Length: 212
Image (cartoon, rainbow, N blue to C red; front, side):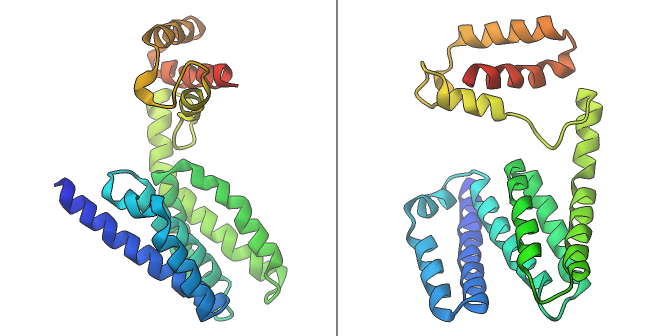
C-alpha cells in the first residue's frame, strides 16, 4: 500500500524533526533547537520527499539518529548500550545508502575534539561502534562475495549515477540514456571480462571513466 508507506515516511520525518530539536537543545540551546528544526521543516525538498517512495526519508532519519547517538556516546555518563545502538544504526544506514560511509571521518573529528574524556575513552567507543556496524553489514558483504565472486563493499553504481548527471548528451534523467551507448558499454565490459558476475561491476567502472 503506497499511501500507507507515505504516511509511515511522514511519521518518520516528524521524528527526524524532533531529533533535530533534541540535539540542538541539548548541545547548544533551546533556541538553536527550534531554529534547526524549523529550517528542516520548511525546506521544500524535505517537505516533498516523504510523499515519494525513496530511501532519502529513511536516510535523513537515520543520519540524524547517528548524530544523536554519537553525541550521546560521548556523554559524561557513558553507557555501552549507546555505542551498541550507534553501531547498529551506522550499519543499517550504510545498507540504506552506502554514501553514509562519508560520515566516518566526521566520527574521527568528533573523537579528536571531545575533550571531556581521555584519548582511550574517546577512541574505544568509536572502535566498538564500527565493529558492531561491520557485523551488521557482514551478511550483505558475504552475499556480494558469493554473487560477484569478489569483495564488494555494500553496493556499486556511482559510475552510472555520475555518467547520468555528467554525460554531455544527457539531461540528467535515467530514461534519457542512449541505448546504443549502453550496448557499447555492455560489449566493452564483456570483452574485458566475460564472466556474467563481473559484468555490472565492470560496466560501472566504464561509466565512471566515461563520465570523468
